[in-house]
View 1 (tube, chains in turn cyan, green, purple):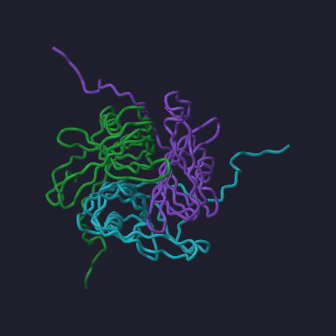
View 2 (tube, rainbow over the protein chains, first blue to last red):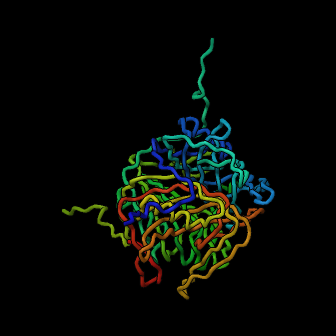
View 3 (cartoon, rainbow over the protein chains, first blue to last red):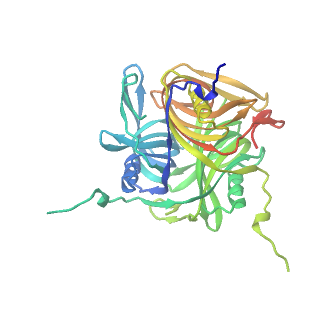
Length: 151
Length: 151
Length: 151
């Protein structure tokens, strides 16, 4: 007789239950850097792991695209005011610093859209919702992708 | 001997801890207005502050882009059915009314994408997740951007 | 004398209060399917209803657009590496299986963007935040849209 359970289903992915200790809304400062502001918020509330979504507008932006063959980031400059139609990301430790891994969708006066990994952007106005997790996340080098990944 | 702490780091941005009182999932009504439906949900559950993400599709949409020189919104019409590939926003008080500040990313039959600030859109199907915060958020005029911002 | 309350406002939409039982962060496995990984996570934690946001990159993707006249999904192939600039979705039951309704915004080396309903995509790297709700959501056929909707 064989006992089995559906819970034995093999899942390759890594995952972890998280406990939220606190939640914040923030208004990013006009003229500051979008990502640095989010990292400053995380630092100010002592967050070693967090998840956020956001919206707003920027005065300019530098995005990046990760080339999966070259295993390198190439930057994409956007030198004009753009709406932040979407922003999703998380905060974790990377080489001893808080890093806000931030992806954005940006749009111009015609609604035309560019998007990707955010390096930096000058805030026009930004509204952020952040959840802080009890246990820190730390990025470590992943051989397959040559990226710094957590879990 | 000098004592110092990283907590003395100056953070320009405004932020506030929030307490979530309740959470909702909603299905927006086909034929209604996307943003008005979200405001109606907020009103129906007595929310004076909330954060939401959503996805779905619309029959048409009017986006807007805020011109950072003219300090005015200019509208962008999209007169066709579009997927709502992303929707992020928040609810706060604006001049005595609940206002759902809503940014969306919309896509057509080829995946081509327009995005920005949402004025209005006729719902085809919409799925929303909303968190309601205990303390209200209220928008007030910001001189620098000529926008109504909270915090 | 008449008593009345704003709560009598008629709201057509369906909505439901949800209770979150647990929250997870996950790192999707390189080479696996983006949506199947999210469904595997939901299965592994016994989730019958969940909401998620995510970001990352994929090696290729098949999106879909729902034609509101034909009432059919048409697929859109993207045969190249793309950033996942945004991902929003939810898990519910559909015909006895867990279904991760997933919308994504994808971008190429120039930041050029396609977006829509996600059928499948090969993960390069993926970071997911998922909230699991106590009560299941189940999709049922909706006559108006010919879609399977919950609530």
